[in-house]
Length: 420
Image 1 (cartoon, helix red, strand yellow):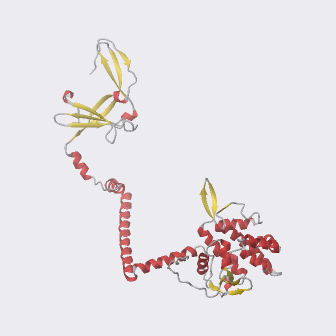
Image 2 (tube, one colour):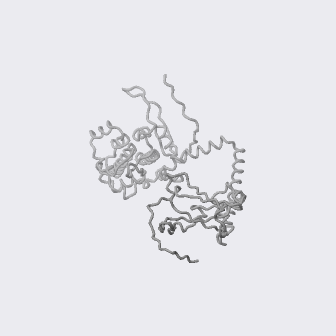
Image 3 (cartoon, rainbow, N blue to C red):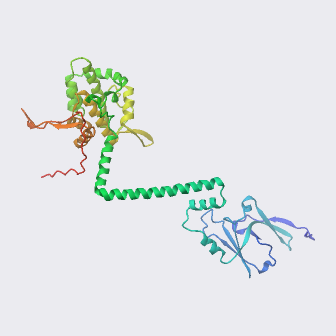
């Protein structure tokens, strides 16, 4: 239908409008309305005005004698055209012949049948997870490939549940046979043994000679041993005054002991002096918490030895925006084991672990645990009587004797000493 106006009219732009001032255009999804005057319209807006995503949400409700209609500008039933383009409505004032143009928003009105919402809500299980909903969609609309994958995953899940049930049944049977306390003791023994075993040097328990159990090349390769020539010569040329100063400073008593008893000449002197220098680095490293790239440079440590120490006995930690090399508690145990094995090669497969634990700044009990984990034989000579100090204790010794000793793990806590 074309309407012809008798007189011309002019368009008038309105002032800036807010979302609440927009005109509303409704469209009914089930047909045209015969008599719009019999419909009652109500507009609802979201109460959360502070939320920028919710403040523009509107719900339009229309009621008639027969049906009720609802439309909204958000959610699945909203019209996407409101986001793609803008709609305007012109309102003509017949007296002034001015037409005002207003922004408009479209609502798709859908009939609401009583009871339909409740039934659809009941069909959805509130306990269903996202995965269950996706599986339901695949069953209804998925491709053959998706359905096969779903079937395979469900079969694997059933197999996994069956396996868990079988494992639980077997575990209960073992617990009933051995008892819970015995199993806890076995687990504790395995864990206690595994903590130290992980940090022990490579061991050849089936070796025919003691020196082949912990091979010297596993601590210092031929290339690394050759690079210590200059540092070993420097250690061998230390004067008695310098050795006394090292003894007074403490921390390297094991090194001083070997330097004071160096062979006069030959390969043995050269080997022990080089090993003494490397041992001093291990002892110094054990007393540090974090080290820098300057570690060992003042002592003349070769670059390949420094890289070996960083790689073998430190862990990288991120602190204050930079990476640090840290000597952790487990790394101290590893240093103790490698230092002990090195001392065995320096002194005919025997070692003074009392001096060593003092140099490493660890407890004697921890040092004994390391020696036991390495299968060494522990011994302590009887007390001797000194000329000046009276009766004194001798240091505890560890020796590598074949076959290696296998110690039983003691689960009893050490008793605290009572002070009177």
